[in-house]
Image (cartoon, one colour):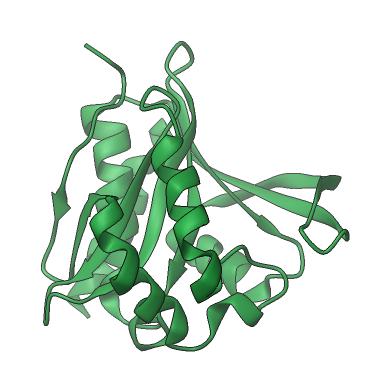
Length: 194
């Protein structure tokens, strides 16, 4: 059995379903809510680039990652995407990222519950010893959201990646380790109950 296999994760606010070509139009609509591709420090695809982005996400070998579409449980609309990637079965580690949400889904319970579901599956089903999150140094909103999850900042990888516009990205690395998961889980459940 593979370390990581397609799975659907469901909660009260959001369902994470394996990304499929059929999500294209709904993802264009979600990214258009807030024109998310205009945030220079993110990699949200513009409507005309969504097909290429989707093809690349679907081409990711299953042993290296799994991309999800995020479906709002209230109305069934697709409101974004997220992934498991940089999967390391030998060391039981993976990264959660490539996450973006339509403006209407931001600052709702959707992201909190999506992370609870992803982390729960990683630590409880996959028995990971650590889960990483990475973001651009300039993405203050993402950095704050990752810290609010209960992740700890491990460090900054300077000049880590070249962005599509040619600028160099400093990458902030966060993680949650296995021993921290029970407290992080309770914290996320508490946030959702409020």
